[in-house]
Length: 491
Image (cartoon, rainbow, N blue to C red; front, side):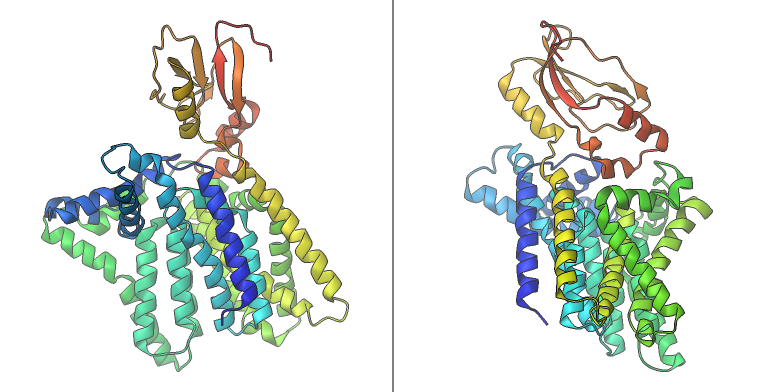
């Protein structure tokens, strides 16, 4: 199944992620704080502290990621011990790139799994390689890799379940697939949609009679629910709030942003993240729909399967946001569409290969265009600077620096060596900006240093911000800058 071009693609993808991770950016958003729960969980586990273990196992905030995070945490800690850095309380956080590099391998695994899923569904090597190449070209699959987040791990588990389940087999195989999708859901609860889609594909695509299909569906759903049911039973036995109740309450907090954007945000986000690649995906969608309309038989085997999967995800996003108003759609939730968009487009491109007019020259032009578009898309994340790294540099270069914001709403973080009332130097916007409620007057002075805020990277503005907040972000100078208030502003 493995091929040399795929190996080159995966190696290049990992190399880009190494560069991305080493450029910094860890511990930027509040969601990354969940990763450090793994460190505390291991501490309680080593010391056999049952109450502490249960505190983390029974938390509704992506329990699976705490368990998965134990692997990079152990490796990270071992490296610190080898270099004699374990006694420094800040060393683990300052070397967070080690853990980020390990976690980034889940993103690379998603690329390889798309190839494997395409092959197992009946695609030839060329079609499968195209699917993997499209996945590897996706900026949304790329730029999250620098952060300590559960999204890629959850997606990799869901795709692994899909790959295993596409091979005809016993109910034991269905049980494994259901368990993996359940683990994917617990790793990042927001990816419940791709988990349900994978279960749907495996339930309906399996061979056998209606009776076997029903039994397979029951097995898939039962094994999917096994972990949540086990955690619920454990929580009740321990005299705590039932896990499913806590999970439901946690789900009710996913309300930052606007429910009404559920239909349009996916396309706005994908356009700003992918640009021309989105147009290629949409062309793939239209091609499958056209072939289906004229009764092209192979569509029913793969193209229509992936089209149905993508449409199902989009419909569930709409139902959760616009209809039931339970979940606001974010950029990270839109990513669930990408694997199936890649599979759809790869199928369409494979069919084009059979057309007389579409030969090697057209293939070359298309590949060059995709590589060029990806290079442009990736340049944004690769040149980003992040607040924590900038604050560290400023703290080492200046004795006293105060911090201020040019927007209203976010609580001010002051971790620099600062005397706010007497400091000559002011650092602006060197933190995560949320929520954004208005504009503040910029202090006068000479700008000594300026760099773009991560929020100026447009895809980041689709992570819980309302249209009004995005408007403020795009019309206000939120750049990170250091001001000398004792000198005239020369800019």
